[in-house]
Image (cartoon, rainbow over all chains, first blue to last red; front, side, top):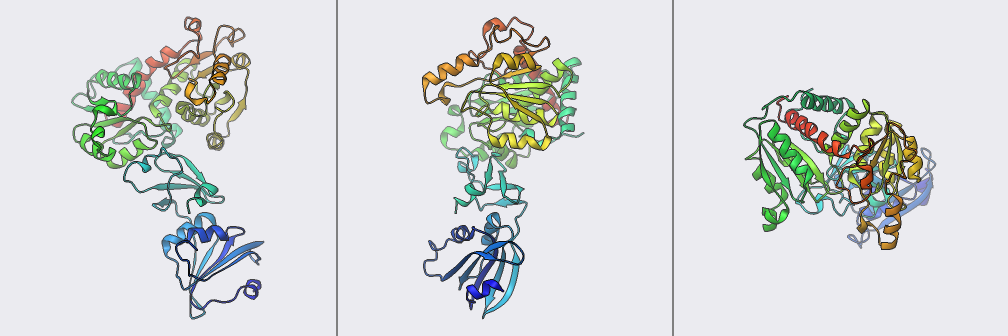
Length: 153
Length: 303
């Protein structure tokens, strides 16, 4: 495969493949890299040619297996991404990210007057469109789109 | 169609058929009042923001149906002043009442209240978001005056911040109305609101000349332009003059034009217009009564 030539294999960790072209750095933001994980080795490949789509980004994170909650967040900006968990150079688990019908707790509403900023309540968004992403706050009904979502990470 | 136990939070929650059913029930309430169908029932009116007409309208509607109201107006007098959360207030009040009407300065406060309340919650205005009973009474007014809802309507004034115009535009689009948008620069209807209407495939046009608009449409829905929306007072003065409905504006008005306004008005409609056949904004207030009677009756399962 084309990308394997350009990006070396990792021993243990997570490979996020089929990221929407150009979104790799936002995926890193969502994962809190490098802020929360200053020492985690990360490889980024952008605009790699792919057989399935015109081009894509790839992120390889060494020594870290992604949790379900993190996967959900990635789906917001890279709905076709696949997550490969690697142990001893082998793919032991492969999953597709999927945007759920509603997203709870992960995001903050962009509307500063939304009741969720003033009461103790878990945020909740209804997914109205998947690509490009369009969310509507369940409480204040304000719409959030790509850029407003990415800025939160 | 059973509305018993349901909430009334956003016009977006309602289908076209449900809105028609509510308007039909309102007409029944107006033309042949049903008597004390809510005897023994209590409506709590929680107005965290002061309001004159909406609260009085709810109280009047409840009394017409034989029910009682409890509640407060202004957060200063409420437990909120002591720091109680909204959800705790709702959990307390629902113990004393059969339904709750709430007005609150935060967007989404009514939806949150409905989440924690086991009794029906009616949104009487949540911040800049929704005011569904106003929307229903606006629709009812148009239905009563025009006999239908697929009318030619112009929405005039502050289309950016005016919460009533957003949900009204949504509902009118649902019924196939043709919309003309007339607003000062900077107070245009937000892109999101317009894109939201597109699923109903309405005809939406923009037109700046008020006299031109009045000569074309059947309904002029006028909203207040608030001074605080303008950083520059001179700009406000200029806009205020341009968007005022006067006899001059109406010189070529369509024979069957009606003018509506959610009120309170400041000076968007000149007093000289009040006596004309076009002026229907005070009838609109009256129509709020059967509409709120219908909502109360339906949500409390009495009709």
